[in-house]
Figure 1 (cartoon, rainbow, N blue to C red):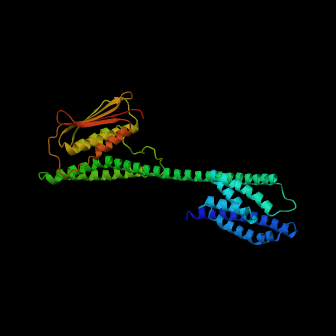
Figure 2: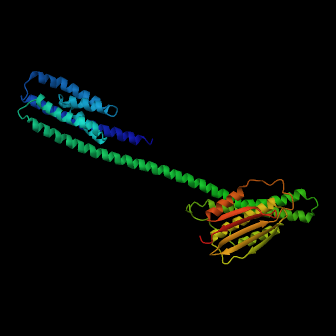
Figure 3: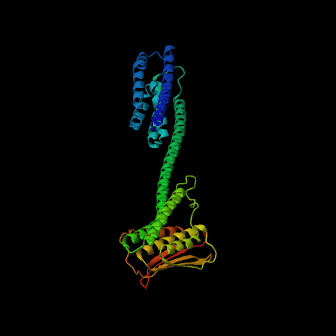
Length: 393
């Protein structure tokens, strides 16, 4: 369907060109026929040639023009040669000069233009009349006519080249736009995956930890079992709420592509609440906060996600150990987040998944904030994670 207007435009362009060439040939033929009728030309062989040969060459010229795109040189030379002895071939000959000019076939024009000028002089002598022009005048007239045709052809070719260039630019812009959309979609999927991991991994790990305790601890009292079950239920509900909040933010169709996530989003004070939740869940967590001032929300949100992921990893890989969360820095030194756990004292649960995606996501998140992150075992057998985040946005 998209090519139909292009084909229709091509057919219309060919139609008016055929009409113009036909008009030129018809006028030239009629003018010569009037000369015969008025008795200006009395040579019977010439009259016979005009009525038969001239007309047949004119028809042949129009047939040849149909092949102008596949054999431009051959068609241009033949129509130019035919026009020397056939006035009805004048239209196709002039058409070919304009066609070669519009397509900037300058080398071929150096042959075709003199051929057409010479053809005009020969034609003037083939059908002599009372008002014949001298040779120099016939040459000058032919040059002027061809010059006009070349100028018109050049203008049409320039316009066509401009339209082609604009069309190519539009196609290129459309392809670039599609590439930008694809990159934006990929980035958005990555952002959604990162947010989902950061928000849900913490809650699900709490649920898994308490569910594992219920499965392995057979000495729990009914009250302790009920407490663990309520903890599982509360964290499952909280995970659903967090999931709904994240999806609500990420699916907002009115927000610009580079807009930061909307509330509810964690701030620096929520790290205290996060640590309290871990303590309530049975972890031994200590918070040391020596921050001077309150960092911007976007930096605080990154710090919160770092602490959240580090505590989740400590719960998964260092069961029963003491964990220390340290927040330090100011507007000049930047924000430093350090989470360290001692060497594990218990066995790791067998049901924990080992994806490694959490630390990968932290590296990406901290890098996007302009910071850096380091993690690994320390000399005491524990694990330390340190992130530095610039204070200013």
